[in-house]
Length: 313
Image (cartoon, rainbow, N blue to C red):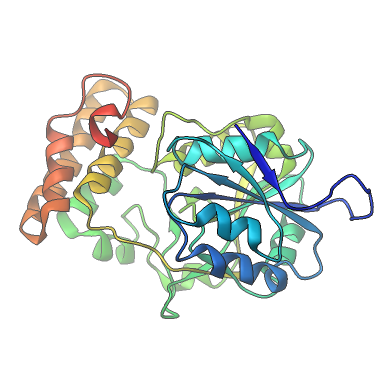
């Protein structure tokens, strides 16, 4: 896959990067400039490089990256290979002993955030560090997650995600007090993650069979299984703009990959019950729009193979 690079890296004059920033783009021209603009202050006091993996965007994403003053390298995938594949392709051109700061193109890193995350990664027991995330309007985003279980699945289905999150039984952590202090967590939504070089060495590549969604759940579980922790760092801040979550295609893919992830770690009976919880929850909300109906259908009639071809075409 071709690599475009606007910077002469042969002089040896630049300091060794302490963070390698990775972002995966797919028709991200509207949001990518904001990410790149935020990095100078967001990474203040930290040496860094930027690598963009572009999943064959049809818009100006590549041109925007190449012409930005931050001068990122661009790995052109040549196809829409998925989020995990993009991270892996970017990581392949980065030194193995580098810490990664993986960010969606619709993230805005707040001033000084990277330095705080890097300080947390200095603890050798930590494999991943995540910041406090805010919505575009300034509201706290419920970015922390519990490991998926029958309890989280069924309470989310019956009570709804917001109520179960506030009660402490859902997959999302919705108690505002939990966001005030640092903690060791199960996992967090993957819009912005700092990954220690030690975790990269132990865990290896991201699982490309998760085209989109649940890839961060899988990766952080593997980090924990390797004996490292996932740390929430409230002193580091980021804004996640977010996108359109009402797409039936994406909703179906999200439901499919949630079940696929759960099935890898649980037996047939438990997986069937988990799948039923998703089908029930989405079915109860089917009147709200086609996205819920698509998710319910994929839960009721899952593909009979390990893959996503039926969904992503």
